[in-house]
Amino acid sequence: MWPHFLGILVTALSVFVGLSRYVILDWSDPTRCAELLGRGSWLDDGLRNWQPNGCMLYSYKPAQATNCLRSKPVVFIGDSVTRTLFFQVAHLLDPKLPTAPSNDGEKHSDHVLQVTNGSSVSFFWDPFLNSTHTLDVLRSARDTAHRPSLLVLGSGLWYLRYANTSGGLPTWEANMEHILDEVVKSPVKPADEVVILPVEQVVTSKLSKDRALSLRSSDIDAMNSDLFHRISPSTNLGLLSSTPSLPVSLPLVFNQMLHPSQTEDGLHFSESLVKIQANILINLRCNDKMPKRFPLDKTCCSTYPWPPLLQLIILGTAVLWGPLVLLISRRPGMSNM
Image (cartoon, rainbow, N blue to C red; front, top):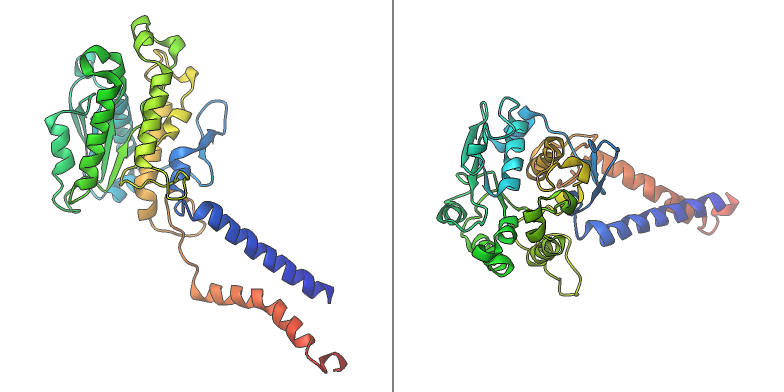
């Protein structure tokens, strides 16, 4: 009889562990987007392999990424940090495209790059995110077919750097509230995926003297905390939700990825690091749109497919077989047979 009891115990324990994981982890983040955007670690000292907690980051090839975007435009608006990410996303989609402006005179300019047989990738210089054009982009989507596939907005450091003329933190806070309000109230979401970049942390020891006086880590932490609580407010139970309640994504993990060895000026980080951030954005946008075939290799921001009916029948039979045999063996008269 002990083998039967042991089988029942193992089955019950497996069901309990599975349900516990669902209630504690999967229920609040069923697609594991929060894992992709919020937590992870470097697997190597060379900072070349990033691993999100709880899911697998996929390295997209250009053809796969362009096929996912379906020739819909990709739009970036913001500061120099946003611009660096723009060039890396464009280069990921088409390795023939540049990874930086051709000269210093183009750093504070708009850029439009055309992916071969694919999307246009645009960057609009607006470090304060307060231009008329930025508002037009947020309001111009007529329907889902004609809106951008990906809209990325980044701001914050210029409000600190030029606080005397920009209005500083209070003005940034009011402007971000206005932008999020525009996204929420828009009849049509401005893009298939809207991303608000965190305010990038700096390496103070490597900043120039002028930058070090104005770009303080404590202010940047406060700004990112403000963004997080606006995008993922507390639930009715008083707990912070791991999934955003607003239709925008906030990749706070970008700051976790930063390392002092990857920057020369304390503000702009290496192409190799930003390239991985660009790949995270493509994982965010594309993983759930790509074909789901076993073994699954795109598990971040993706719903798991249901097994075929035959597999479910076989699994159900295997789980119920032990208790059924035990029940039959305990019926009166069966022990004498």
